[in-house]
Length: 109
Image (cartoon, rainbow, N blue to C red; front, side):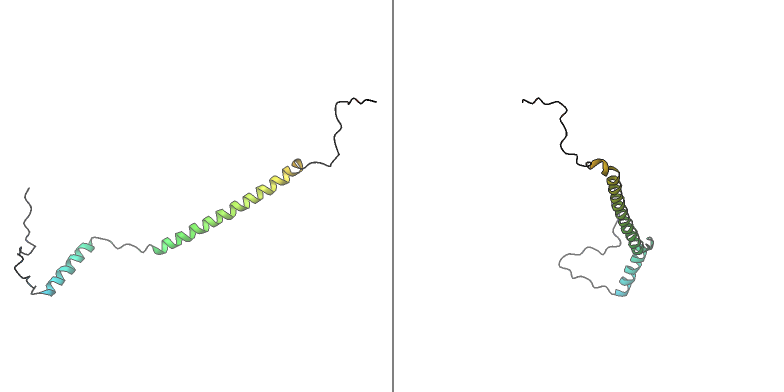
């Protein structure tokens, strides 16, 4: 496979030769602008996504705060209801003093 000839490039010059100044700088600018327009022309303009991203960030932050508040409410309510239901069973009843032994004691006179 042979490479294509480089017709669009200037001819190769040696170190001894001075660079040739372009006679028509306006034409170079036009070529440059044309190349830019051809390159960018195929691309579509992208919509501005900043406002959507900010809005989504606010929604996420609000959602996470709501979940935190709801979780704290559920935890406190569960603890309160649990203590209310189990509290009387966990607390000892009225103090009756030492329990009487179930086995009769043998006492010596």
